[in-house]
Length: 129
Image 1 (tube, rainbow, N blue to C red):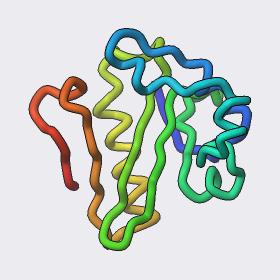
Image 2: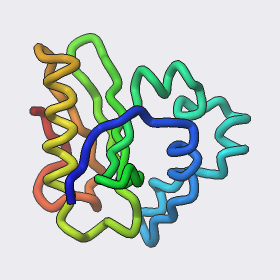
Image 3: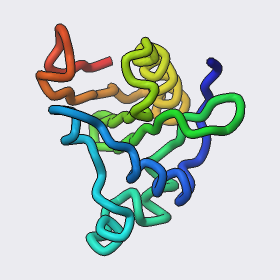
Image 4: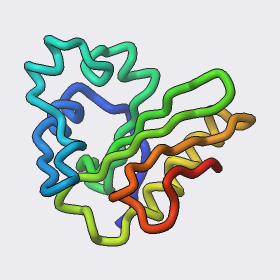
């Protein structure tokens, strides 16, 4: 599967709201689009979405995942999400490679920081690249 980075459209953002992670991963589930729009969450604000969010799509332009790159003073804080049906298929390393390349292209002189919940990693509690 070839993956590439595209603009995260409103349609993609709405699709992400329909992803349903199971078990302890449900903490990553978004509420409905209507609810997060009313709450004015970042992913629903067009300018914020264009500045911080990116879609990861396959060759057919189907949404496979997304990333959020938050430009902090001294580093880039990243967030990632993978479409639920693609979880557990070994795409994590590929997604992280895409994220790192995007950060290098946009913010070549900044560190990359990823916060990870302890149940969602094997070895690291957080990583800095």
